[in-house]
Image (cartoon, rainbow, N blue to C red; front, side, top):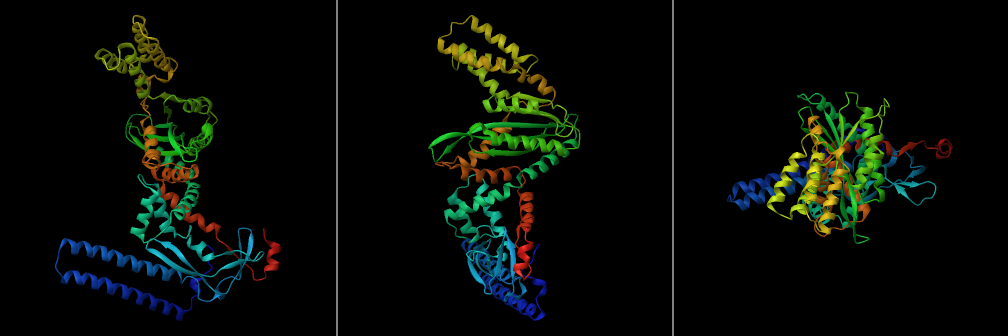
Length: 499
């Protein structure tokens, strides 16, 4: 990491002064904490007094941490400019150091806002803009320190969060008073930064799950199940509802238990091409990096247009990215969607809610799970229809449900799928729609513009996939690569060598 502050070069006399100031700050704040604790001990003990003690201690502790943070951040650059390089190269341009510090009064930390004094570097070519290497070193995002940025982004990703609730939480828990526009800008930037590491960490997470599945106890073969589904989302610009999409990759161990799931989510898009690219890339990179025995591969969905197209155009043709061998994907049409068609046929044949119809539907749902179940179900339904005098509306209703099963019987071989210990229900993916979208983006009165919804989805996908911590660590490590670089004092000769 490029150091502009050079703290190791601080002379001994300055070290002594800094330690003295630190001790003074700590002693002053410690005295306040002791005084508040003694006031409680020496007074009347009541529930109200106990409550107020903890509230006051928390506020005093936060204020002490805020003062210490401000002190520390303001002492990593020397008081004078001599310890810093005179010129730096940053984002394709040269910048010249100014010799007086300027202040940023709006740096937000976990303990409240602080004032940061730092040396500016002015664009050597235009003289218009300035950069602040210290702010880059600290990793500020829209004026927020990395610790607060992580906390605020997580608040925005959590279920039930709203803009108002997050702003209130930042004020109450961290003493940070942001406006709605600041929060939106921050969320967009932080989501984009974190999303750049999402794919790699999801691949690593699934590889970890596959390793756990391979080492799990049981006689079954591990399974990697892929799912995809759509959900409507309100568009604020068009005042309409459009279909967003969610996808999942789950790993099942040898005992048949689901070990974990990673999620994908994307805003409404014509053709859903971005989701197709993201999901395909994730699957291929997992298979490319997995060195163990190949798990069973299955695709469990309803039979919607995009779900069907993805199987026919991508999964059915997919080859192993390393060996080039054709991959055997089992497409399983969700059992519970098929069961709904049985209910629809029963209502058309026997009438809605009839005892006879309910009994037939129960038998057919059990029959569907037996060998050659779809064909036996269709035979029974057709035989009953042949002796019933259905109305035109009832016949059309029956035919739609009947044809749904008839055209997909090879994807409804539930007896065979269960024998292979494959999941036959798309509940994981349907639940993903609820957790990704409904619990956060479809709260009362919410309408979204696509960029805002996309930012929330990026954060939420990372949170629900269980990769928040590794993404955060990768983000903080990579930030060092984007720091300004010092250049030689002779800027003219240096410019000739610049890339």
